[in-house]
Length: 115
Image 1 (cartoon, rainbow, N blue to C red):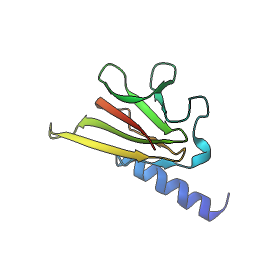
Image 2: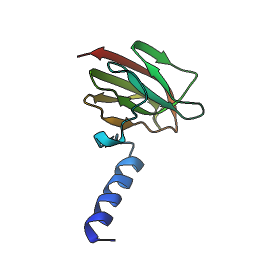
Image 3: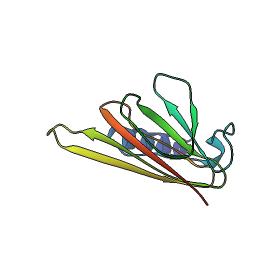
């Protein structure tokens, strides 16, 4: 393994540990949903496709992918160590995917707009 790979992997691991959001390369996008939609990966269930806007408080979202022809905005809320609500936001398009931290996630909202 090259030094560059180690440095990149270490940076990604550190970002995840700090609660940062990691955007994944376009080729990681799932290709099983229709154009103009999003694919949601939940922590304890099967992935699903979504159009429009939906809120989730019973299911924890681990990963969101935009399909071709869709702009996706996803937000997840967490309670930090000081008992204050913190929101993390993903803005995805062009088949990109992004991940949310699962631990401590209280709710999430995903909005899909055809482009």
